[in-house]
Image 1 (cartoon, rainbow, N blue to C red):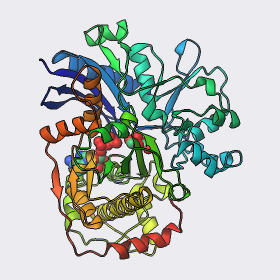
Image 2: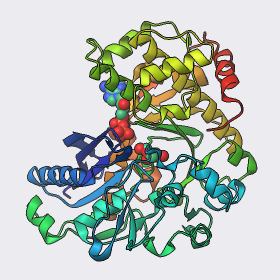
Image 3: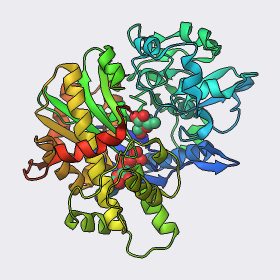
Image 4: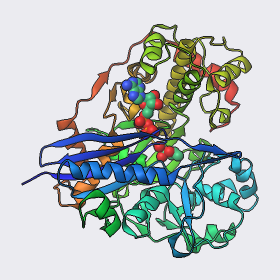
Length: 490
Ligand code: ADP
Ligand code: LRH
């Protein structure tokens, strides 16, 4: 039988891509047909997504997939949490905001007065991040004329199909979703004065949303193609594509953000998990993604952007990483989750500031700053994998590192060294693969469960293995950072 061929649209906060994903009985092939830069746009102190521009790029990519072969389905995943509001007639009311917008400063404290942290965690099981949808909504103030809230992949899916819905894995990241009841918490919206009626009905990853609208069909050149709900939270799709064979694995989905944790059957809602600020997000096939959101390679990509803006020569990512590999290890370590690293800006200066405050040697060159960022990120990986294992009562024998960061050999090797277990790196495009596999199953591929999908990835994709090396004192480095963290678990 002919392989299934779908368009997997994977939207990251720093780049979006549209892949042709071909799935046969024993084959799996990904071809990148369209890639475009992405980033929030600052306007008058706010930070917005150019969502119509993103829609145009999605269409251009899908058209390219259709032009180069048959097209059996389309699925969209993106970063979580952010949303658009629709008014009468499905009209978009303003540009969606980025979660890095400052409008949620102080909002968690405000919400805490109505719903305590412990109570909120008991319902949602979610890490406190000041930008969770719940806090963004509280900061909206008024909902006059608002009829619907659509998370970004659901909004783009709506523009393709005319159908509204809330895909479950992404709904689980909002802070309005009851992780045990597996439904929106309308009790929570009511108590916070939020309009629960704007939340659409939930839909399952793997369900068919509907065929593309006529105007879309005309643009891409084929009619009737079904749009399929995938794990529309990019991290949910990425975890589908973690090529794990054994039970005792941890994963790091390392892109703009780093998501560090375990796949579980049920949520961990203990007081210890809450205090450690771990999240229980919904995965594909009813799994739980028990993880910590770590500031990630954003700090490095924003540094590279800053150096490029200052027209510093010789600051390409490969060059910086080659230099950093030769640089002294663990010379300067900072708390990579410091909230001051969240917003766009002069990241090298902020890294230097954090080092100075911590009494660490101040890194002076781009290479030294790069090394500091990588070492500090690895410390966060180490800390959070250990904590996840402890909280869930699990052993971790291997770490799978997927996403763009899997191409960073220094990061992978140091993660193995720091944790004392092998790191298996790749695939780099895990989210697109997970997206494509869930679509293929919906279209009839024989992929009964996550195990079958992962076996197909192992058969068709190389992973690079990094063995742990002894020699560095990670405990000492951790205690330098811990001293600065003041017991705050971010
Ligand atoms: P997202 O989907 O969140 O936008 P990606 O998964 O594409 O992010 O990962 C982007 C990150 O991957 C970049 O910030 C960069 O640090 C890293 N990366 C991408 N390509 C390479 C490469 N060739 N070598 C090392 N790191 C890379
Ligand atoms: C990664 C991601 C992550 C969220 C963040 C907003 O791209 O979806 O899982 O916490 O973006």
